[in-house]
Image (tube, rainbow, N blue to C red; front, side, top):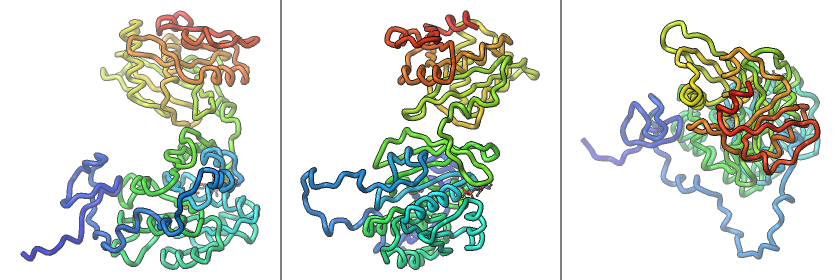
Length: 456
Ligand code: TYD
Ligand code: MG
């Protein structure tokens, strides 16, 4: 056998792990059956993908000479998106918007185009998925657009590159990266090497011509095309669009942001005319809350610097077939199991014969320890079939010994709950000392899960 240089390798379509031989399970991300053989990128192009050629004009500067970064931001016209971006789009940045197919990525970005074009910013929407006429139908639902927006149905990246080099566009949308095709790479569109190389080309264009480029990346579970995870390290900002496809609410989360914090979220509602901002998520999350039913508790969560009140629902019933069923929707399954175990061990509730279902109403996904006390309270309320007074809100972390621990942002949480008319707020006892009392609001400190039991 001739010992030539290897020209192909196996790549995990989920995380990009590279291996010389095929593996059933990816050692990088532990997903099964995700390794696909692909040609290795030609050597000449490999170093280009790493970074932009900004060295040409670089010279040492004092901090005063550097323009403030805020001068370089463009508002998207969508407040919730600006918040997640840290104050608008930074000129010349590369942004990745990931999410399940059908969640609303194209809709969101077309709405961004609408606002930018209304502000006379030249924008280009490149679609590799929908034809021009399909885009027109969608755009008509969203409202009127000015002529600053141009549409291009194209998947050939060389052609797109030529257009971007004209330098007329401030902002460009690439929908989606998995449809883009670079003819120097022999692999098919959607493969790791195509997706990576295309992103490398876009990165260079963004930096060299000062164009802000949004890249849409579908999250796929079956590994048929490369997922957006593969690109996270290459781009400046990574946003994920999440939510229950059937429900109206969508949450935009920042996962990485070179120009701002990553713990802000934006909340949207999908309607007949596209996505609407939800400026006051708490009120939305609590609308339609049943009153006078056991197992329903309002907990105060914190997303970024913004407190959000959510309804936690728990349903505990007798197990029919020996092995109890447990389910958590919108929160961490393991955390729910742990809290049920704490209840069993520390306050002697016999939960091993109960099925338990816990749900965060409204379709938000929240993994925050401050939700613990709310989950425990909802579970006990359902187990004992006692209704919690609807004017009660709660937050606090629960430790393994059943102790209630303090959390960050207690004052903001109490403030938001009070603003929405909650009269009784159950909080970790440690916070009582340093929180100012608010008129008409009773703060109840609890030290342990046992203290909480007395309240229910
Ligand atoms: P889309 O933006 O195409 O999702 P993605 O680009 O992430 O794949 O969203 C498609 C869904 O949104 C589709 O199920 C229809 C729905 N939708 C509305 O409910 N209202 C609207 O105004 C629009 C444009 C879409
Ligand atoms: Mg789309």
